[in-house]
Image (cartoon, rainbow, N blue to C red; front, side, top):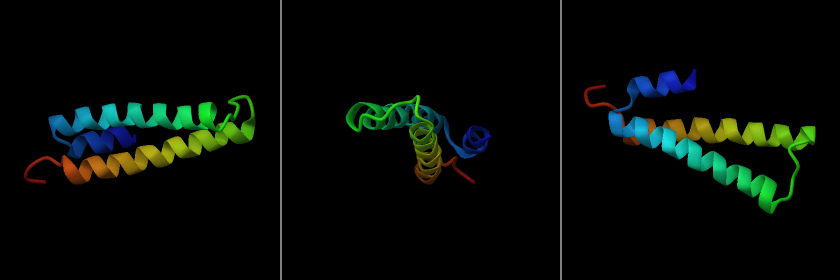
Length: 74
């Protein structure tokens, strides 16, 4: 749902940056949480921490993309 709303306001370059940034940010978050901090995905609290972090990252990244890559005239 957030993707559809963000894509509506982004230019073509912004859409590419949006999806690439999401993928890279989530990979970095997963590596940090499960690799460096040594949490487990099988633990419910750690899984909720991962999901909460993923939602926050996606919302913040969509706002950044809309600020920098908004369609002209909107």
